Image (tube, rainbow, N blue to C red; front, side, top):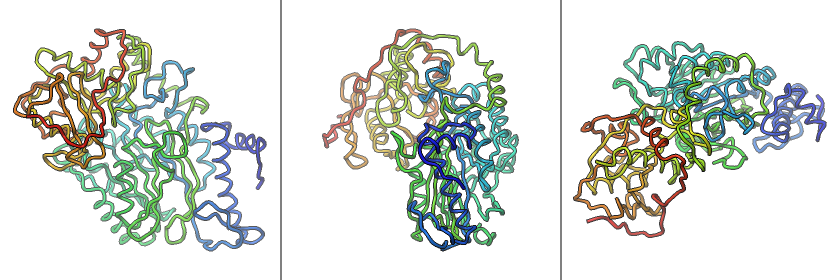
Length: 577
């Protein structure tokens, strides 16, 4: 086996990988060094550790001498999550790629290229999907699951689990989609009386050739953030994982390795790792978490935690929308523990070749979007930012909530929208009808609800604390508000006391006063757990229609943050009378 350094190695690396460039030349070299490290480890096995053999330990250091455990097993995992119908390339902001020269990323034709050119060099590999293929672009708005299924079936997936958004149009549509897929769908914690749905699911999957099993769990909050049927229940993910791992160990004694494929979010993956046994690798989704050494990463790839037995558990996730393809090589010892690893998320940029066959299909389907792409609603001087909406005031949130307040200005005092309902950023320049539908793909309608000032205080306290003050359950989204609302909160205060001030139309809320609020039907019926489900409302126009009309009305748009939601060091809540 040849080894190369510097430019010579980079050229050889590109040759071996068919010219596919991943992120940049330095990352290509790093990844191929990782691959060759595993090759050297293979060579050490073949030599029985003699003649310069050795092994790579869990810290990534080369150890000379005989292998301590020549019965170890290597397996490569490719994984993807939260693609949200981004079958085609897109801007990293999430907006449509109308001008590739500006830099576009992702798209399943790039995923296919990387898989076709690298997976064949891996003797043992699995390709896993952590869910949320539905909802986010016109591919889903116009075609629902049809084109997604046609695409996924061309990629060689070994298994997939379900995200919460797979339930956005109910159990029946989801079930029909799943029956179109040619690979297994795993769920260990979804229990449904919809036989068409339940028949499409398996509680776990055993890969006998790898002596490995995959279990899978979906967030138990799905009922509150999507639209599963009344007879579809979501078991606590940790309890389900424990139960399923125990069953696997009892029924399949030859299985030495268990992987959890999850759609519960990065922080919940960490909790899962810490509160279970037998699971050595967690491949996650839901939180759109970027892991690695790149700017903006939330943690390491992999993140390593310790389980109840004191064993290491490796956690990976691959950001969102298919901008990255997750990739990790692991070495298992004979007991199923990971003793070494290599890998990193693969960045799919303009430099990554698109598979021509799949891209031709995507281009053909995209012709249905022409009228949406060419209908210009208005123009914005600055980008309308979405990426920060889940943690702070954002300009797209401001504009969107203002559109709702303006629409119902005769009756509503203000407007509230969940940050999770705003899905794509708007770049500076023309705003098209397609972008309106990509920002608000769910078809939610505007409604009006009456709240007392005391109820509003409790609602906003729950949002900034992350816990509904009435039912004690998790609030699953941050909020964006219209210009008539001003609130401050102290993140350092204990939960239940974080909200410091709340004003509507420049006056502190009066606890005994009634306020009419414009919001979404999704929130009105209990979505994201802002408040208890209600039915005392009439549905009005859809959010995307209201937003599009406001763009037309206010163009040219020039929005900057104006302090509607801000933090403070004040510690004493200033509640209304």
